[in-house]
Amino acid sequence: MTDKLANATLDGARQNPFVRARDFIRDVISELKKVVWPTQRQLINYTIIVLVFVVIVALIIAALDFTFTQITLRIFGN
Image 1: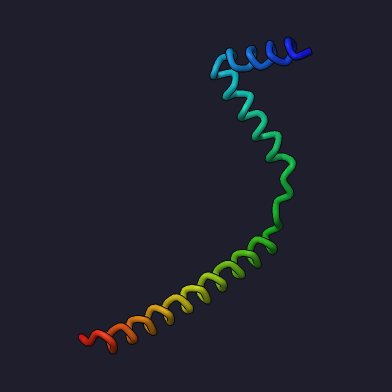
Image 2: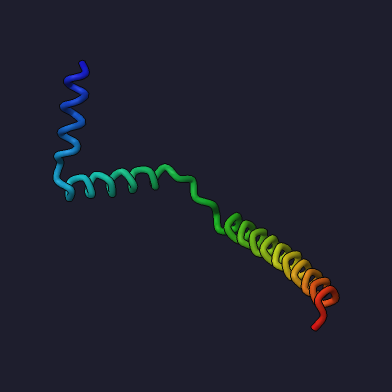
């Protein structure tokens, strides 16, 4: 039984790279057909949520940067 597995592995390793690439692309297309894609409405909602979150995080980082800059300037002067 292990000989069959070893032979199958060797056959796969010796296979033409173009055949392997074709098989890979075929498998990718097959998997993409299984994906449940979001509707346009869901996509818009998710995009808005992500953008709002990014803006909130950017504001937090800007506030922290400003605060630490002010603290540093007061400690070490101009």
